[in-house]
Length: 123
Image 1 (cartoon, rainbow, N blue to C red):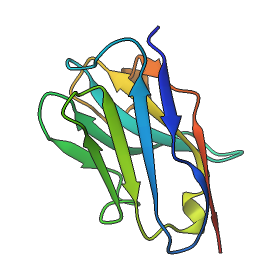
Image 2 (image 1 turned 120 degrees about the vertical axis):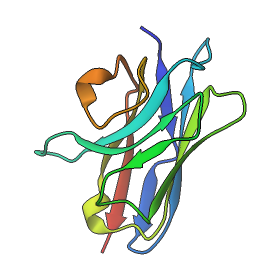
Image 3 (image 1 turned 90 degrees about the horizontal axis):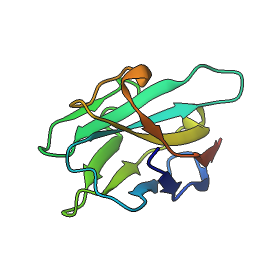
Image 4 (image 1 turned 90 degrees about the vertical axis):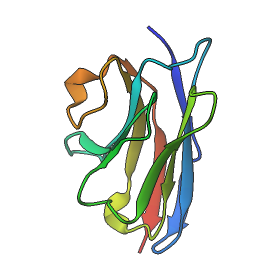
């Protein structure tokens, strides 16, 4: 198990922005894709975005495309989710995850998960 730690969540009003980060503890993830998923109370886990660590390919859920941007830093051991024009339906716990693959929308392809960070968007 490789711990992942999310940060940057909070409470914002609709139309506002937040920047989430995900840091790996004790190692780099140069060979891993990284993804963001979210889960609201009583709802299923939902894919948000993914990025390949060794290239810049990205993939977004249709619900966030054009509003959210996934990125990584040069060390390839941190990953970010810039969230703009937030909507109340974006309210959820956001989880980062790491996959030995190239990144997909399928949660079962990810081996490592963080504990989540709460994002709450008020109307």
